[in-house]
Length: 203
Image (cartoon, rainbow, N blue to C red; front, side, top):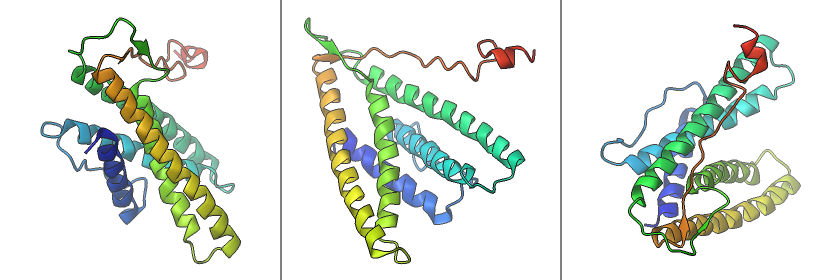
């Protein structure tokens, strides 16, 4: 299997598993051991974070949500965003290790994003596909609604093919030295009590 075939299969596994209970507060258990299958371990954790946050975002948009609960949930979303970014960096570290010995060609170029940020978009796309399919097959919705959602689902499925192909091509280019990885750590300022002026003022 190609990398993107593995990733899409793991993402489907995660999303299906999550929806058995369908509760963002359910306990998390990684289906893959990091010592025996690090890649799937990282992909599983990444998609679980995205899936939980997807449902946080649904809940916080409830117009009748209690303001105290909304503030607590906003902080959970912030923490989830940090976890998401950390996982992207872990996955990029995996790729850096995988391709660290590749001899880079003289005319090699850099990509606009690292492979793991492409994986991030692929994980979110898996969630869009799952939930749009739910809407396209929801029997308590109107036929017009289902038809409109099916058209959107068709576009999402095409987009997943294109994105999977692009990620796979990028990895192939890196593996053969036609492109090289240069990873920048994300410097999020709003969670840092030295960089966020509001937090700094609380010290």
